[in-house]
Length: 128
Image (cartoon, rainbow, N blue to C red; front, side, top):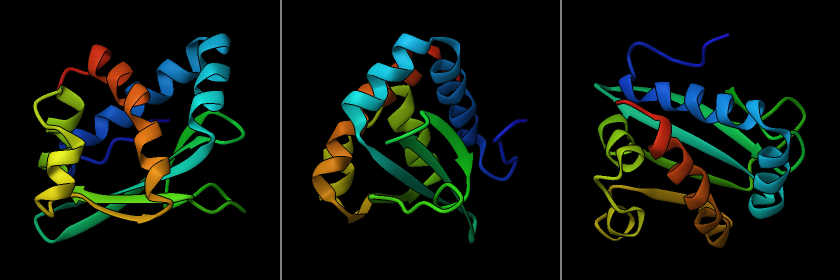
């Protein structure tokens, strides 16, 4: 099942991240060990909004919505679809986006820094 939403072109990255997590059991366990949280992403594009989560707390999976069923995100990152695409492609820096107000973080802000290795993995595989 694809996680892509056509109104959000960069959402293909969630499929890439999920595929990466599901394809290698050792890497998934390592990502859970390093991440230790549920990360929610809310993307905005042309007045629309949609959410995805990356569970690096228990299952090591990616899904649609703000959190897995019965779970709660530890940190929520809100940014434009365009900026998310740039972040995944390695053309933008999360700290600079945050400092300029283009990336909003709710919840455990220090957990957001744990997301970088996962995004780097997506950068290696995503063709956005």
